[in-house]
Length: 542
Image (tube, rainbow, N blue to C red; front, top):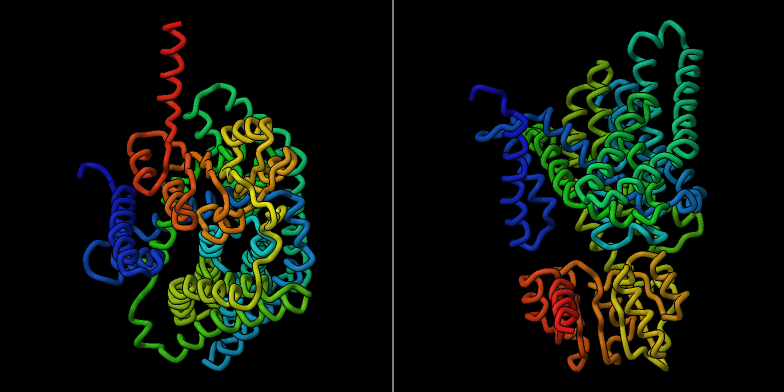
């Protein structure tokens, strides 16, 4: 090759092998994350065969973290963040302290110095952004109270790690010996000022500029330009936050998304970034797998088991106890416990910094990487077990319901999706005086449906429990107004199983989507392009 193709080779190897391993995992009915991690091991430097560039893979993975946190921010508001501060701030601090203490005890028992043991414990205390958010999104929990607490907890951990990354070089990089405690205090003060400055800048300046830029772009009518604007804002704010204010990429991206989330274009912005978020999130797991050296399993089995136990058991038990101590229910406590029972990207950075400063042995870094792999691999299983336990122990919490469906008079029509099409349908049915139940996964849209006189339920209509909650078993008509054809097919299949006599009408954008939806049991499928063409042809004859 006449030119360097390491970037292309890394992307091709990462995504190609991830697809094969992810498909195998799906076939075996296990989490695809396991397949992505195995793909990373296969293309990593510690196994024979294809070897991708680890440094490039880590940078690509960082883009995935940025886009993922930006997407979460789009569904968040400053009010949501402040609403969970009373549990997220003290809870995260207490959990970091407990996990760090356990890590320090393990490090000292292995003969490591106190400083190295402290960094090791700190690395075990912080959860992975990508793993936590993927788990919440897979179960439609991001916008629930449990999800908001978990994300708020994550942000506090993020800020604590930013502080640690600044203070550690000051303590062990040579400057700490000269200035002592005064130097550390000064460094901590500078970090605090930068964080406050960043938050102030985003809430005062960026809050005025970013929405205006996005609205102007939307009015140009160019979908390509709008998508480019969203990506430029997400990546640009994240990079600027790291360079100018020394905060993490993830925190910068989250605030950018939170500001744009207050606009009417937030849904569209989330949809435009979704494909890239998924692709780069996969590269994150591949990059984690590339760091794993299988030899650690044979060379340090005892310390490895202890490390995984701290991550999976110690952190989870501590988080559960803390959340319960603050008066929250067992469902919320179990969700937070399962969310935090893993480690990720910040742990790698801390491990590399500790080894680079020569205060932490390389054995500790290997244990952190191996612990990360195993905890990420087990995390979907823990989440599944936690969800099953919640369903067995308690009824569904009221937080997912805006207003319960009256059992005595179930709605004759159930409408899924209250976007632009759904609103028009609701207005037409409301004008005829028909009883209507609306299901939407966004709180603001459900609230709008409720204001229009419908019974509203917040939730993912692909879930059988949500459909039953809407009274589908006794309804006469189901209208599916969402634009996602694949999801609509899954909804049709579950709805038909619940109520075989139901009349189901859905929308589609292509012949393939229409065929799939009909195959799953829909009675009628409306294609916007065909309906428009028919009306225009009818007008032409008139």
